[in-house]
Length: 68
Image 1: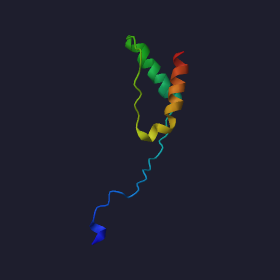
Image 2: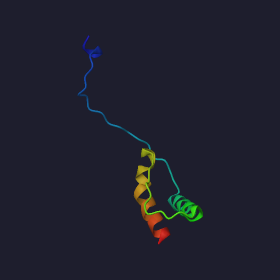
Image 3: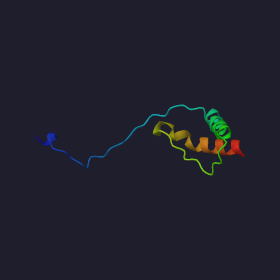
Image 4: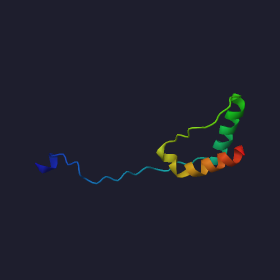
């Protein structure tokens, strides 16, 4: 009977996969989109799926260096 009782204190480990992404291409596409929009942008919100989190820092660095 105890196996049917809810236990909210069980430890949980979340495992997310890592999807590949071409960081350089993504940064170039962001820059192309910015240039073609003809709108002055002061900041950009970078949102991504957890599967791409392992490349988020590299993308931001590459995008920043591409814009400069």
